[in-house]
Length: 368
Ligand code: F6R
Image (cartoon, rainbow, N blue to C red):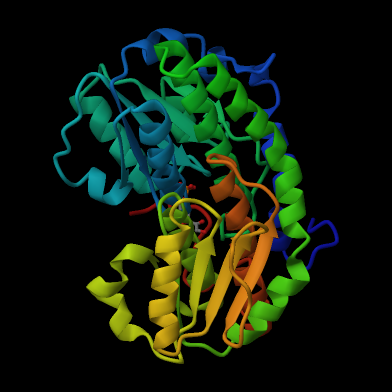
């Protein structure tokens, strides 16, 4: 049931405020996360963890990439993230003090399960945490610790609300880890919790920019290519924006860290290459602005997803769309991703593709 929406994808995009609230529900009490939310043995297992290894595919991998910025920046906890198909076909070093975190909406992704089983057979002592949306899945059954994302069923092949709830779950993991290991001050913990509780309302507000995003989509629909740029925690969001656009609209899209422009992709830039940037008002904005000047000088049309404080105004071929009023370190990637989902959606609808069932793709990739 599409609930009055034209596609499941649009319905699921709009379900995000509720899905995020549901994922937080019952996991926080009196401003503090409950480590037992991860399982009764979580507290004991988290105590000895010295590094985190995240393994996932596709959109779930992008959520893991965001978490790496958070864990290292906020907790100082060494964190690696790798796509499952690479991780399980090499000989990764997994030390006993690692927490293996498997991210998967379906819990049935073949490569992710294979990676889990490989670690299990070689390093039976390493604790495995599944962050998953499917309670009956193989991944949940085979893991030691589990945190369910409460996104509800995701029907559209392109993942939207699963990603947002994975990020919220990873933020809960950060809080639990910081609490058990004593690496978060009570004040920062309370601030992060307060920030998390604001995300559903911020997500709701981000959805109100739909008609402005449709106007941008109209300018993209005839393009062959698009380049998404971000810095810091917005780099994985650039990758995710590009993935959403390519998989449902079939426009070739790439995400790049903005600082890599001069190392190759700048050669692609001309008036036929639209550039989408994710540009919150933070300490990386000045750097991003000089990257935008470089592409503008070569004729690219720029589409800038900003916040209301971002010091940038629209011009002839520079479209600045403020999509949120406030962003914190944790909420920013979750909130900025939502307009990119809508952008991909509108481009696909304008092109007339099969939005919920893109060609060649399956919802759950159960074979390698
Ligand atoms: C993209 C998409 C895929 C999945 C990937 C992993 O929109 O949906 O990239 O994210 O196939 O699937 P799960 O999370 O079920 O392991």
